[in-house]
Image 1 (cartoon, rainbow, N blue to C red):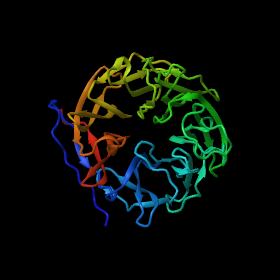
Image 2: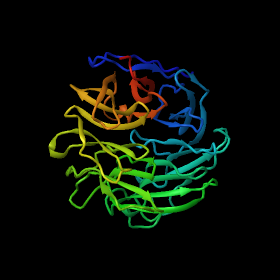
Image 3: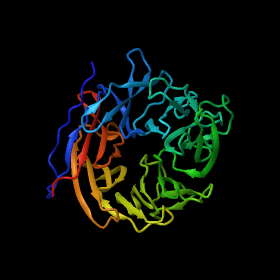
Image 4: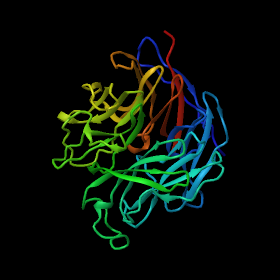
Length: 407
């Protein structure tokens, strides 16, 4: 039996005006995880998640919703018993103007813990049938490939950006399947796939990145932009951006030089949103020894950024997402106080000069990895906010439609 998710609006932070919250009636069953959001070419909200199969293995599902209250029955994208499923590296959907749907997930390619491929599939009939899963990359190494961001490239071509661990193993495929992190550096790569899912272009964007922080991508008036957490020789792990202009990717530049020295991966990537030539990037850092959630803006399509705002301090866990629409800029993140996590949402003016609302959306029962990475999707007005939590001994997927409250 599928259970309609029910939601509890918890007390606001005491600001004068609270968001208006409407539950989104997803049919994700108890035990669903790795939930994500995308927008269909027709404007519909597409929610996806992974389910465990009773006989073993997993399947990737999606549901099309017309916010705030109407959702079609869920549909299956793919299933398998060789997937790599975890709390931080989420499968995702994206759509193209030609009506095609695209999805990615992770599939094991060796016995090592971090030996898996980022694989891609697409549907040309609204999700009824899907192409066979195929790797985005062709290096053939039993190494980590993941943290994908899909980037609609044209009417019928899909772009993808991913972390690629081919340099972290020195042996060819099959020769050393017990290799994991630790030889060469993780890299960042991008590619474009045509309507037949054939790769047309591939680029190396960064030869040394953080091993397991989420990437993100957006489209500006000047073309695609990508953000990720860099890793330099001194183990400084700050946020970089690359822009695709005049047929080539620019040399990566720092959004802001925090100088966060971190000898391990924090599993806490940046988020980006764009409207025209305006770009916003949010990220977590512990530069200076204190947790900080930061938000910066650019008025020239990501070429340069103003100094960032400090959004939250020692209580923040990061795990940010960003969205922008006619209302302004929306930001979600997690906090933890006295061992209890909570989910927060704030809304800003485009220039970030005014924080209009900030609100705790929910106190969470889960801790650590159980709360996953909340996701935001902009609508014409308001946003959809989706997250994972636990209920009893099972994971649950929850979502709301948030709009600006009455003044």
